[in-house]
Length: 172
Image (cartoon, rainbow, N blue to C red; front, side, top):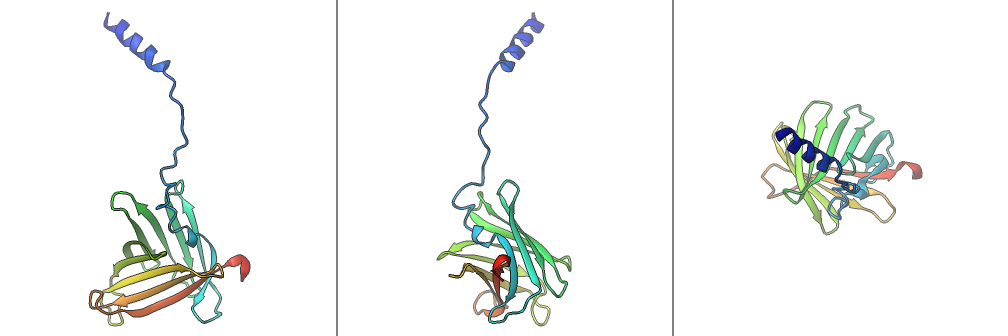
C-alpha cells in the first residue's frame, strides 16, 4: 500500500507543469546605477593626454556583477568586482591589485555620482592606512571621471589621491 501512495505522489509531481520565467534578479534600477562605468576605456590622469592605461569594465554573472580589469602602463594591474547588495541596500566593491592586497569599498549614488568609501591598508605616504573615497561621475562628452581622495584622520579632511578620466576606446 505504501508503494502505491509513493507511486501516486510521484505521478502527480511529474504531471505538474511549472511555467518557466526568465530569471533576472539584478534587473532593477538599483542594480543599473553603476552601468555608466561599463565599457572599454582608455584612462589618463585628468588634464593630460597620457595613454597606455586601459580598463575593461563589463557586467557579468547574469548582470549582477560589474567586473573591472585594470591594465595600467606601469604593469601594476588589478581587478575589482562591484555589486549592489540587496541585504545592505548599498553598492560594494572589492579591489585586488597585483600586490595581492584587497580593499573593500561600500557606498552608493549621491547626487547622481557613485561614491564608494573604504580603508586602503598601507597606502598612505608613510605606509599608514588611508580612508579612501572614490567618486565616479559621468561627463557630458561620454567620459567618466574617477576622483580618489584620501583621509588619514578618519574623514575629517580629504586630499586628492588620484583624478582619472575614462575615455571610451572607440573615441580616442
